[in-house]
Length: 417
Ligand code: SF4
Image (cartoon, rainbow, N blue to C red; front, side, top):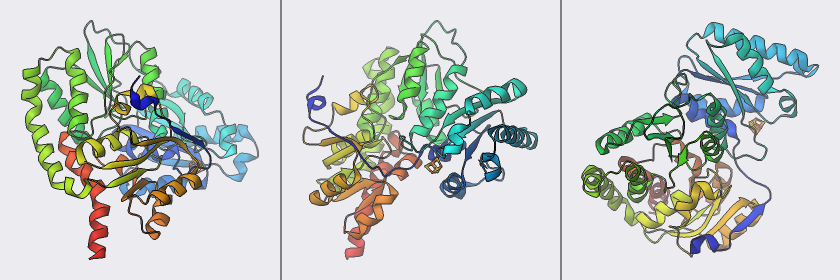
């Protein structure tokens, strides 16, 4: 166990200010082009999904909300019939859908509906043309990135069994297609493969899993999915996440070592993109060097991003809050944080706001709900949700990642001038 992991962690279980798991639909529906997300929820859920994802509406959107009405509440049997009718109507209209996710929410009337039974019932009628899966995006006791974990977890039992006698790589976690292509090129130049990405671009093309599958996680919030894949025989490669030059190099190296790639070849393949990233970071480092940063717990990306800011941008870490400290997912990152960084898990929002106000950091990374009040108090903020929506993985995006943090500081200086 590292020295850092023995440091006291503030653990809080109080009022929290986070989005719910429905938010994951925003990036998941863009990734899987033949999937559809049907939220079973209230008008509040419909508003959230519409306003979060509505800006990216396609000619044929890949999400919708089945709103439970007063009439549905009169009898659950009616609600089940109504849901089946709604699903069939949608599928008749949209033959392009191969996988439909029924996404649960937190209103009590939805909790009473058994969506797993509904999915089984519908599968009996609709398979193999369409697979119906279900997961919960409820805001009760979850944070917004857990929506992706629950979604991918629901797909794991349906992944085909791998028959490969040699190692296969599975990259787990939604990343932008352009970043996926960059990683594919690097793995191919290294001679690492075959490589599968999960989630895939087409939900009907599920990657195989088995005892020779090596898991490389692209996102740190997929603990349930990783455990389910491990239960199917896969092995987790422990590594920092591919943020910045150091994170990306360590992440690629974790796979390269399994495939026995020698040092010379690894350096030959990674040197040029790593150098481009260093040049991009050098331009932005003056904005962040020596700046004191405070992370509120929100996206579960906090620890890897804090490591990036500390190691590669020279930032000082005041407090690094995370909704959950899942050591299976984050061990290789924790080892790299400085002993001076206060790590906190969970939230008691008023107490944490007091600590933040007392510290007066140069930059506070937090959810939308906290950003405006803190800005009004003269603190500079960065919305953590933006870091999930933007392509920030890999060498080519390292500069963009630093810029996301530098922008509020730049803006503040311009306003001051
Ligand atoms: Fe609100 Fe719950 Fe619906 Fe999320 S799932 S929008 S928290 S009612």
